[in-house]
Length: 256
Image (cartoon, rainbow, N blue to C red; front, side):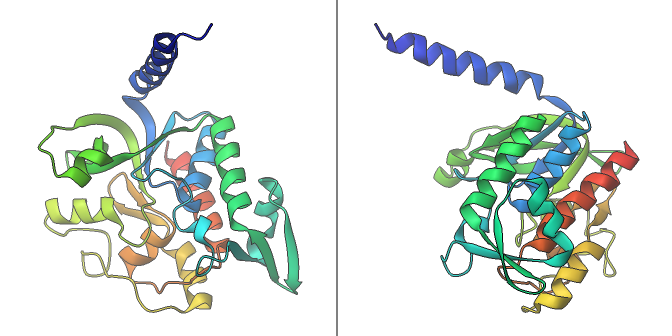
C-alpha cells in the first residue's frame, strides 16, 4: 500500500532537515554552472560546509546547451585532466582540442559534487547579501517563483564565511554588492567593468587571472569573473570554467 501523506512527509522532513543544517556554513556559492559545481566539489571534498543556490530548475548553467543547442563542448589541454578526474568521457578532435557531451559533463560534475558533500538548492534566488563591517558574510534568499511572480514576500538569511559569485555573465551577486556598497569593488574602476566581445584564447587566460576576491569575502569565478573584471567571453570552450572553479576553491581553502 502506498500512502500519499507518507510521501509528502518524507519529502518535507528530509528537505527541511538539510535546510536547517545549512543556515550557517563555511561557503555559499551562487550559481550551479560548471565553475560553481567545480568549486563546490573541491570545497566539500576538503570537508568545508558548502552550499550552492541555483535560481533555475536545472543545473549546469549554459553547459547543457553546448554550442547553439548542439550538446557538445570543447575542452583544451590545460583542463583535460579534470575531465578524467570527474569521469567525463571525451574524444580528441585534433591535438589540444577534446570534445565532450555537455549533458554527460553536467551530470558528472553534479554527481561528484553532491557525493563529495555539496548541498545544492535549486529554484532559489539570491536577492541580497549580508554585509558586516564592510565584508560579505552571507546571502539573502527567496524562492525563484516569488521573484518571477513579483510577489512581495520577505526573504531568509543564510550566513557564511565566504561567498562565491558563480552566476555567469550577469555576475548577479557582485552587482548587488556594487549597487549597495557605493561601487567600491576591487576592480580598476571600483565598479563592474563589463563583459567584452568573444575572444576565446584571451578569455580562457583572463578567466583564470580574474578568479579572485572582488570585495572582502566575496570571490568571483567563471564568466562572472570575466564580466566583473572586463574580460571577453569565450563561447562553448569550457576548460577555463572548470579550472576557474578549481582555482577559486583553492584560494578559499587557503583563506579558511
